[in-house]
Image (tube, rainbow, N blue to C red):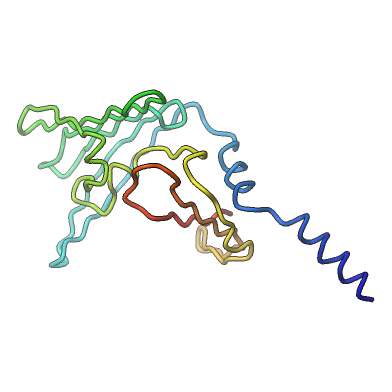
Length: 175
């Protein structure tokens, strides 16, 4: 009886996916060549006032090249953001500010700055290299919601190794 339980536990252990294996599956998923999306971003300030931005985003090369144009509100219309990621040097990030007729460069040291006054930072707009993180599978039975349906999903923790990041870890839920 004990031998059977040991074999079952060993079999379950061998079939269990670890964090790096899940991260590799995510990294190797089929991706579109380019993406175009129209988005709405609502920002709420400390006083509860809301600002709704309409924007169009286009990206290519697994989002290594991305352009975002702001369509509304009128104060932000015409603003744009350009990102080009490089493997061998710092990424290029620039904001076009039509009100000032200026192109503002976002330096690598400013990646933790807020994007358009939201909780999103410029770092959040960049891709993460799989080798820059260590991974831990927190759960293979977490509950997620997708399109008002509760689903079982994996919960993955990613911890930066030797890179400059404003985050000590990322938690990702994967369906």
